[in-house]
Image 1 (cartoon, rainbow, N blue to C red):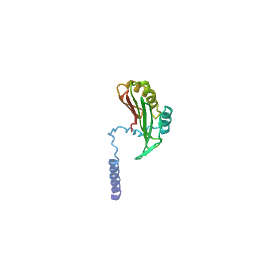
Image 2 (cartoon, helix red, strand yellow; image 1 turned 45 degrees about the horizontal axis):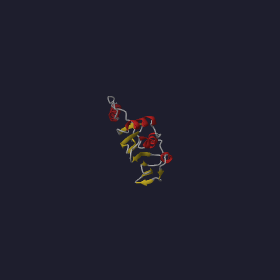
Image 3 (tube, rainbow, N blue to C red; image 1 turned 135 degrees about the vertical axis):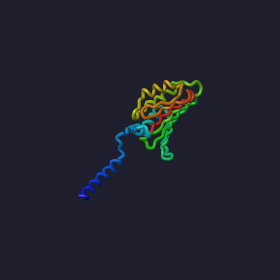
Image 4 (cartoon, one colour; image 1 turned 120 degrees about the horizontal axis):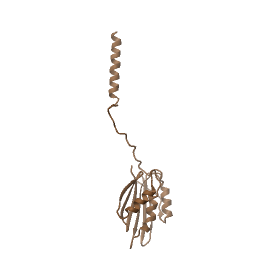
Length: 171
């Protein structure tokens, strides 16, 4: 009989140790962990950008690998207007950041900058809302700022003489 009692006591002690070490506390109400945001604009490829910039008259150079990140530059210039677009990616299908800049001499006009800005706003990535992006840009040309749309942060800075639009993955 003493061996049987000893076994029961050992099993009970083991069960108590396992229950106390399980890390599950019935009174705990931990908030669910939100999934991490992607570090790139999911669904956007570098070839989509170079093709679109070329269709708008910019000359794009081949991507250059700089410290593990690809960097593309597209530009076009006349005596009165300079267009420049740059974007960065860990791989061609993992675009992380886009910057488009329009610099104008003389009397600056929104209709000169609009096609390039609209192209960037129209990009298709996971959670994109091109209509919302275009509306935000139009509303904030004279009062630059930032906003998040889907998995991207939009930043508009400068004024019509030198307008910069940046699009960056939130992760």
